[in-house]
Image 1 (cartoon, one colour):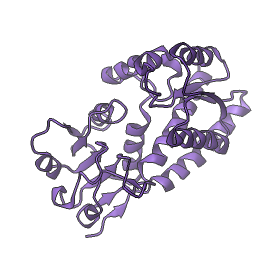
Image 2 (tube, rainbow, N blue to C red; image 1 turned 90 degrees about the vertical axis):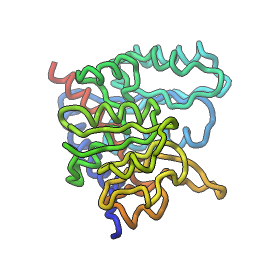
Image 3 (cartoon, rainbow, N blue to C red; image 1 turned 90 degrees about the horizontal axis):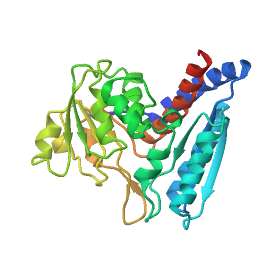
Image 4 (cartoon, one colour; image 1 turned 180 degrees about the vertical axis):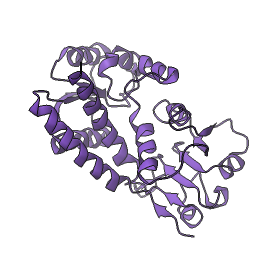
Length: 285
């Protein structure tokens, strides 16, 4: 068996085309969606991600507001940037690019974001609404994974999903999304305390690998025909991006995301979707 590709790049392109039409309709009504970003420091990966988000905005017609601060920025300076975007009526939603440089309190910064402007869905209030099942901005990567599965007509309801990794941006909220009534999956969340990871993964119809450990999921751990989604981003000795899925999983699985080109483009597309969704909701008020 050779797995089929869960092509996040192609699906994201389709979503951006749909968003372009929705943004044009909003603009006709005098509503201009705007995405803000706060970038602290000169980490090359973070700079690339932020640049890509602004290019995405230009592509679909969303205005973008960019605040870049040096790595030497103080906690007060970062929080002042947050306050600036909280107060800016041109900014519909915004993100603080993580991780922040050492010495800055990420939780304090995220907690200062106006929950109604939280494009990443990571504010404690919005994570709480997710637990309670109330509508709020959703974390972009988990939302993107659900959308990628749906657009490939992969069954979620009644399926057993295993999430590997318990990070705040993917692992924990992933389980919350998958167990909503609209998804209705049964979820096992694995982490460093899981005694037999292979046994847990073997039971899974859907595997979301978000451990950040290169090749942690191998072919012998995979149920034939399962859908595997690779969220891990690491670099090998040649500085090449590698994911959590070993190459041999393609011989056993039914569906696999490439890495890069799988989950990443969906994350960016969902960031734009969160902005447009919120703008449309505002337009109806």
